[in-house]
Image 1 (cartoon, rainbow, N blue to C red):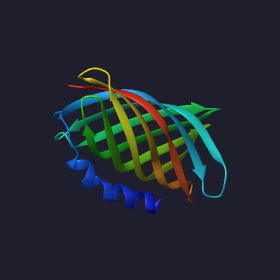
Image 2 (cartoon, rainbow, N blue to C red):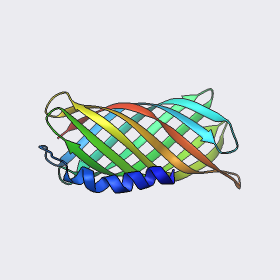
Image 3 (cartoon, rainbow, N blue to C red):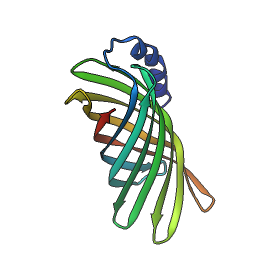
Image 4 (cartoon, rainbow, N blue to C red):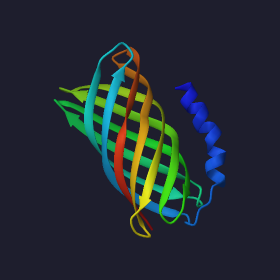
Amino acid sequence: MRNWLTAVALSLPLVAVAGDNTVGGFYVGGGAADVKLRFEEGGSLDWTAGEVLGGYKLNPFVGGEARLGYGSQDGVDLLYSSVYYRTESANDTAKTYLLLGYTLGQLSEDGETADLNGFSYGAGVGFVLTSRLNFNLEYRAILDGDFDYDGYKENVELSGVSLNVDYRF
């Protein structure tokens, strides 16, 4: 993970100087994510989660974004929310972007809950459908951090691939 974070940190200035012809502003969207929770001690859980997102581009290159995701599989519910710093480079056809942030989450089963929290990062590519509508494909480590259940802590990684659309105002 440290190598990935170093690569992201080093690439932020490169993304910020790339060409762009879009403007800043608000955007909203939604989509689906295929996510997997991997435990450090072994074992994993899988979900298909629905996500809603919203953000603001401060300028053509940087902005902030918030996401809310929910999935349920075999009686285990996953709920997470993420906040990101987002860098973006775009032209009339496509865009690339990086996400760096933090995620809080919760697993629930039969009234029992466990908390999840940790850093989040990812990269994506988007394709311009219209001047305001984009289709995005991305990979994210949605959460790289701690699983906490009744005093028991373990390192976990919640990651996945997502498809979403966003509408820019």
